[in-house]
Length: 113
Length: 114
Image 1 (cartoon, each protein chain N blue to C red):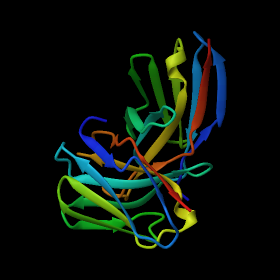
Image 2: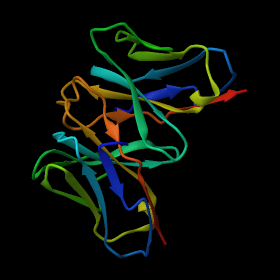
Image 3: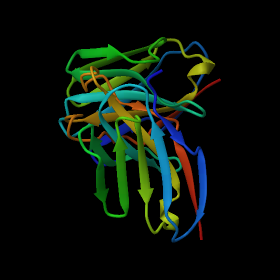
């Protein structure tokens, strides 16, 4: 989507390696979110940010960490990738959840072998 | 889990017909939103309805909200092949503060047959 990009789009990595996914926005929105999408589970929140250096855990945060040193970038790190983290990861941004919906990125398909 | 649940899980209709999908949730909400996801793509926001609203329209979309039954419905009128996608409801729960993320259901997969 215009205004939000995720990188990489696809990645294959080995079990036990660290992996960092990047979400970059040009909308200057305050709120940023990382979700994972798996068959049978829908979208589940991993971590979210409500400002620079302000982050918190979501529903499925174990094994993940995040950082937000600039408004425009929100990084998701898998500290030691496991096969259960094979998933499609989506970043979303929001200016005000009370007024507007989220804008989603196109996703990163991560395979851990 | 506070997750919303869509019903049906899958729906196949003929082009031109109306499609209705439902969402139920468990706790009080601030608002409820519907999203569309085309295969291999990110989700696209369709419509937001606040807890004090009962019905909302946007083009061929009509959304209703019944907070007493904790349910919502999405109606797509005069369906087109391009409407083939998965549709998700998402809720912002009261007390969630808005910043801590929407909770999504598992989606309804809609197929429009030409």
